[in-house]
Length: 132
Image 1 (cartoon, rainbow, N blue to C red):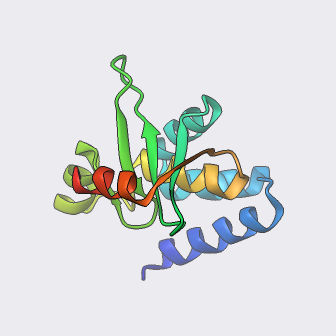
Image 2 (image 1 turned 180 degrees about the vertical axis):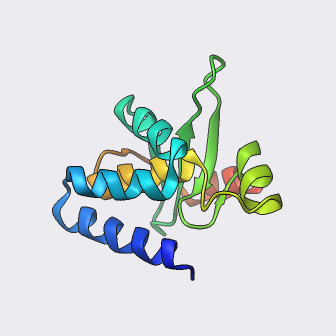
Image 3 (image 1 turned 120 degrees about the horizontal axis):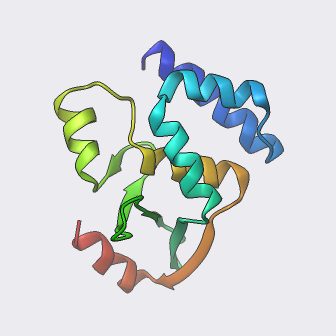
């Protein structure tokens, strides 16, 4: 794990423990993630993060609103994967970013307790995952 990832992880854990974010934490995250973090905060402010959890397994995936006028929604796992184009282009292919704005929005909303919680059956969750 890179030094940047370790710093980010420490900040996320602090935010999760208090459910509040300080100016210093915002500055650190902005320094690490740049424009993607700015965009992620807008998504969270617009209540654009849904946490979809299966019942009874409690497995979950996040559905995050895009910023485009078409209001696309992307399925993602905050620490590992997003179905958006930027994830594959900027992160996987070019390695220029640590994560995309949708992953950051999901992580921030989770840390602050600002997700819209949606419960579905495990079968419905499996169908969502099969469409990735």
